[in-house]
Length: 235
Image (cartoon, rainbow, N blue to C red):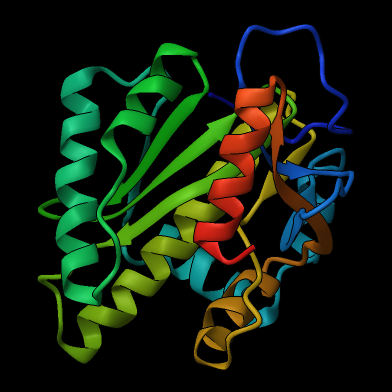
């Protein structure tokens, strides 16, 4: 089974896999599930990217940089120990929020394919926020985002918000300078309870785009597996 991200279409190449899973492709084969996301065009100057930020987001980024003294670090080729550190941080956040745990196998597979970048935001004493990205040289797609769940006071939560926004901004500029063309904030949800997450992503000034996730059977076996998976997943 092969996972293919960001394909321009879902034309089947001559491959050995029985089944291919297309994630965020531009075409919509039969039984595809639509996926809305917000994408920032990195083929712009830093000044133009800055102008697209909302006033509140721009203020909090500047405050995080100038007053909070936040530090941003990147693991462009993360080691197994660094991935383990990320998973521990994310899973503590996920447990606190009632979310699914990180997929360790997927993170290692992305690392092995040289398609993983991890960014982190911290102050002098505390790790505040971490992001993990799927990278293919053209698009950087946010896969996981987590904030330190042990910081719960109002002032601490505000600091986490600034740390998260500054980390996004520094990652945007990092990928832009590395020659990437798109920064994908990882999805816009139709669920009312996630509207605050949507507003956060929209504050960075991206363009919303509909893409598609689909299961494509290659062999007869793969087609049968795809049929079963669609039935099981209610697709």
